[in-house]
Length: 432
Image (tube, rainbow, N blue to C red; front, side, top):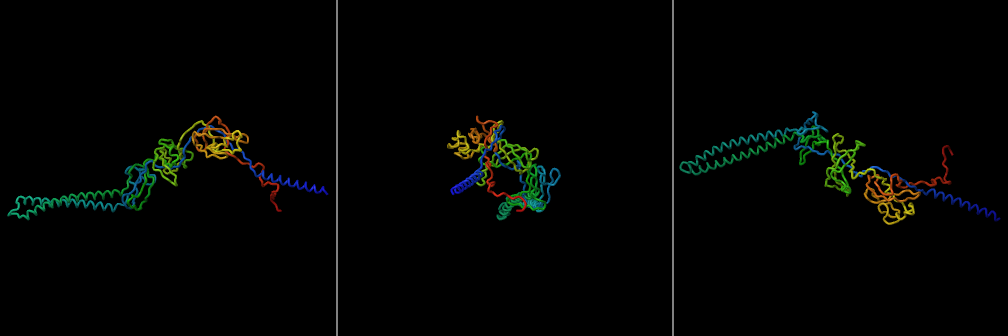
């Protein structure tokens, strides 16, 4: 009777071992194994730069407006004989547009008539003055006497004084009439809109038949650019980078309409009127560039690079290699103090912490990590400039071709837990 009882115990023990093995297999299959991702140290050229976005603008722009109100009756002709339109090349004094001048011509004629009237009135007053002067001369000879009473004597003197004053009033009226005439003629001339400079019409903001209404601010009719062979790029630069920008600094930029083509320029002016948007302060930089070939058009968006430094034949590593920092368990025991000591690593991270490294900081010390079997060992380097992708490094422990760790990649060590022996086998095709 004891033998069956022992067989049952053996069977139960075997079943428990099988269940434990299956559970251990499932647990190990869900635990990932890690391995290092690496990249090689290369040698090449590096240009450190500040990236920003700007807009291509004409170097000098003039907004041509109207000083009088009226209806546009026709446009002038450009130097090629075509009607003024977008892109028309004009000379200084070219007629751009004509405003209906009927009312202003009538005002000028009225002012001219007023001037003639004032001149005629002055003639009459001068004649009266002559007569009064003669009467006064005779009265002075006679004097108050039996032949000339005192009242007649006083009247002659008063008439002379009044006539003389009237002549002065007449002369003033002529000056006033002249001013009114000049004003009317000037307003009449304003009906003809002329180009103040030699340039190119960038924008035409009116059409024939449209009424221009003059107010406190002159309405804009045309936008002229003096010379499109010299252009500017207006770039907004963050306050954190403005200290690295100076006049004459070389600049390169691209525009989307010419992919792959790099344009060159230099910093011309740093505007001091900063702007603040959402607590971010930016300054506008004027970049001067040559546009002799005429490829750059106004208001294109430019992707700008302000060159800070240029290095040739230096050792370069990906920025990820300087940002990566291992856990204590991933480091060769000989170098544990690097990750366990306070304020160690790339940027002063503590144990097992990834530092907030700034690879662009020049002259700072940092660490690269090299694979040593399944562990990592450090290589101390001096960190130089960066272009945002790779960083210049130097040091006795780093050389061209060295494989440095840039991160970790996770792999399944046994298999997917879904492939458990207890998982149902999928049925493919057919009917059950």
